[in-house]
Length: 422
Image 1 (cartoon, rainbow, N blue to C red):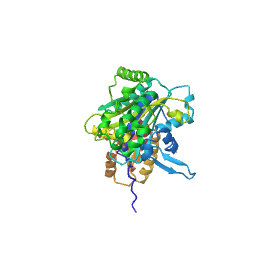
Image 2: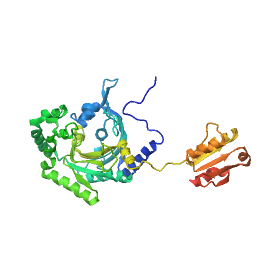
Image 3: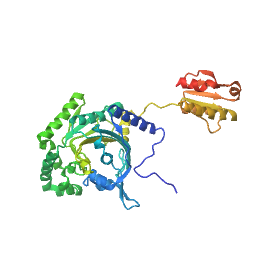
C-alpha cells in the first residue's frame, strides 16, 4: 500500500530548502538589528487559549482549527497562529516583570489551519512573526512596521505596499460597532449565515467576508475613521507622522479589517504590488492589540505584531525572479582510488570537517571519471586526488576546478592548506 503526503502539506527537498534557509537567515538578521529576540512556543496548546485569544467569532476558531482530545481527556489544538502562544508565554513566564520593556520577540514555525488548499494557502504552513509587548507608544508601531518592510527590502522584494488603517480604541470601536449593526441589520438576511451570526457578536467581521464582498452595503458601510475619538485620531496621526519621517510609503484603507478579535488602533497589511503574484496578494498582516494579555490572566498590557507565511513570500520572490540565493558550494571533494586511499580519505574528511572545511567523497566505489563528475555536480571548488602513488609519496594532488590548476600538497600540510583556501 502506497502512503501519500496529507493534502495541504508539502515536502521541502534539497534544492528548494536552501531558499527557505536564506529567507529565515535574512529575517532573523533584520530582527537582530532591531533588537528582537527569538521565542519558541509549543506546536499545540490548550484549545481554550485560541478560543479566548483569537476569538470565538473568527473563521479560525469556528472552522479551521485542528483540535483533538488527548489521553487525559483534555482538548488540545495545533496552533493556527503565533500571537496567542507568545502572549500566553508572556503571562505564564511573567515577562511583564522584566526591567527591559517592551519585550521584543520573534518566532518561526509551522501553523495549522484546515482550509481548502490552493496556491499560497496550505493546511500546514510556516509563519514568521514579530511581537512587541509592553508599550502603548505609537513609536513602537512605526518600529514594527519598519521592521516588516525591512525584511522584504532585505530580500530584494521592492514591489510591495504598506496598507494602513486604525481600528481605534474601545470607545471608537463600540461607536463603529453600533453604526455597523444599524447599517447591516435591515438587510442582514441577504448575507451569508456567517455574517448573520456575526451581526451582534462582532459586526466588524462582516467587512472581512469573502462571500458577500460584492454586496452594495459593503461599499457603503460606515468607516471606522469617521468614528475615531480624538485620542484615537491623535494616535493614528502620530503613527503616520513617524512613518513619514522614516520615509516609509503607505496607503490608508479604511476598509482594512484584520481577521482576529484582539486588534485595536493600528492595523496593517503588506501587499504584493506588481504583476505575476496571482490572486493572493496579501503577504503580511498585523496590528496593535489591547486586552489579549489581560484575557489570558496577565496585567493590562498593550502589544503590536505581525506575521507572514514563508510559502506566500516564496511565491512573491519567484514571481520577481528573486528565488535564486547564492548556492553554498562544496569546498573540497576527495577522489580516492584503492582501499588504502579510501581509508585515508575517510580520515582526511573528518579532519577537514573539524577544521570547518565542507567536503565529501564517493561512497559507491566509482571510477575516477565518475568521481570527478560527482565533484562537478556538487560544485566543488577543489578536488583532491589520492591514490596509491600519492600515498607512497606522502602527497595529495589538489585541483582548483574553476582554473584547472593543480598542485601537489604534502599530506601533513593538506588540512592547513585547505583552510587557507576557504
